[in-house]
Amino acid sequence: MVVTPEPGPGPVGILGGMTFADQALLAKDASRTLATLNRATKDAALHAMADALAAAASVVLEANARDVAAARASGTSDSLVDRLTLTPARIAGMVDGLRSLAGLPDPVGDVVRGWTNANGVRVRQVRVPLGVVGIIYEARPNVTADAGGICLKSGNAALLRGSSSAINSNLAVTAALQDGLAAVALPREAVQLVEGGREVTAEMMAARGLVDVLIPRGGAGLINAVVEGSKVPVIETGTGNCHLYVDASADQEMAIQIMLNAKVQRPSVCNSLETLLVHAEIAPVFMPKALAALAAAEVTVHGTPAVVAYSDIVVPADEAEFEGEYLSLDLACDIVDSIDSALAHIRRYTTGHSETIITDDRRAAERFVAEVDAAAVLVNASSRFVDGGEFGFGAEIGISTQKLHARGPMALPEMTSTKYVIDGAGQIR
Image 1 (spheres, rainbow, N blue to C red):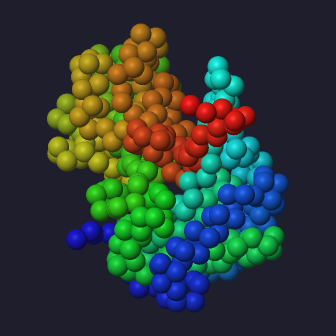
Image 2 (cartoon, rainbow, N blue to C red):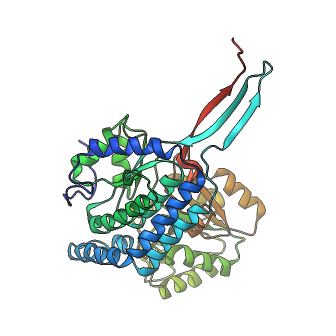
Image 3 (cartoon, rainbow, N blue to C red):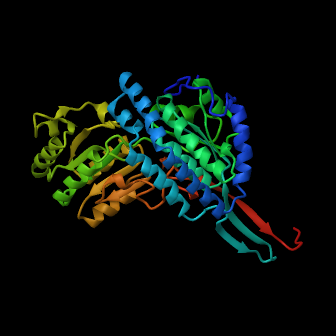
């Protein structure tokens, strides 16, 4: 039996009580229309979707307030409540994200490579939409707008399976996006919210032939359930057990500023810092400063005995605390005797998301980059930069930690496949 997170009945269907199969067939039909659109039409749709979402801001905020109140009443963690919460600024960011997508190049039709054979046959590998993209995600209603916009721009229909905790928010956002599509005479079914309980999620994962790819976004439980239970091909977005290694040669003030930004700026997201590793050579000087800075930022440090020795406010850490995400103002910490030890620690515990070194030693940086196996490796920069917007991609669909098709922030090109187009003039083999 596949276990999926946050089940809930919710209302019975944004399109009037249709079954999932009905919605998937409508999405398949819509995807055929989207695949033929030129850039100007898709960009006009994105602006219309942005306009409709901006106009519906008060409706979306009111719906979100109901979701947040219900989440707090049920004892949901602060990190998940933060992911769930929308504000005027966050809605403005969603609107801006849709508009920024309209300003980005259209990947559909791009020639990845091409050549002409000796017999005159011309071969081109061309980007094409994936088709129907299913996205299963927790909490974050901003994903509804981001995913709908990215799928539209890349010529894909979107089936969005949000969690029950965000049902009111997702209904309001999806209705606005569909109003924008209708305003430019595109099918509303190009972006649909899939509602229901566990059985609907199971249908979605079994819909091979109707859904072309699934993308899970959320915690390890959700991602593992989709990866292990889906018959539909999955692009895995991973959790972020992100490490920061402060090398012996590091600029210590720089290290503290990057550490604070990576941990404190938004601790509930997957590119926030979860484990700090410090070279033993600089620990006597660095650790007191780092611990004081973290305490001032209200971060609770969970440390090994070597770290506990520097402060009685450090909480002793057990093995499990190095294995996953806190997604809160908590930080695991250890002191290592060499870059080899740091690399060994990261190899053992990494989730393959984002790993950082702070160093002034070029050889150490080059070695770290070469040996760390992650979607993003940073040298003297905060892991908070590992984000599609910060990379200049516009809104992103998620951060892939797998190695097939897409790795790292997934933007428009990653939402396409390719086909080979062969042009001849009567040649035969």
